[in-house]
Image 1 (cartoon, rainbow, N blue to C red):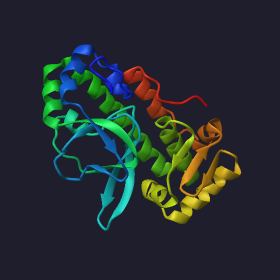
Image 2: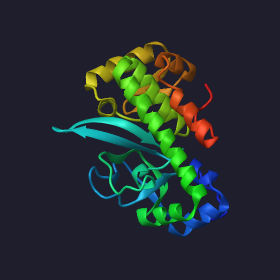
Image 3: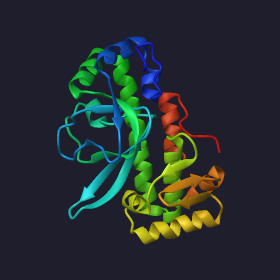
Length: 241
């Protein structure tokens, strides 16, 4: 298990100054994060902030009547609980695991105390929040103006960036919720991507075969947020095509 010497996989923890990591280290608790573990409930106090080591967390907005759509994702490049970094206590959205993984959790009070102590820690975490806002903005733009197969290509690329290997375990039903569409639409979009040789879809699994093709299919909806993350945090989260 990583120590204060910093052998973490999480990009934020890896990038911290030793003095900043020392502030967090006594309060970090390793946790297994299985699907569909709920990290944050909407309109409720945040119990823990999680720095993900593996897996994928989905930030989901909900309309009355139970209509859901994903507004952001977090993996080993980041953290949950952006609202805590901004000095808040609760979010209007829910956050849950969509791909099982692991991480380190910390109580909001402990994180806020460390942020109040260290300007460099505050600056680093605020930079991540800014990068996350860029991701959410790109998601809004794609949802409003991109074809479904383009949105799906973008989403698969984002997940691929945050996972080991080329195979993602996800069902059509889950993809439909994440993209805010009906299941038949996901089936059609996947068939389009399969027909072009970009992916292979089996029951509950999608394998990336041609990343460059997916980038072209995304039609400009992928890349801007990833470039902003690199600009702000100095780390590339995009896999090679």
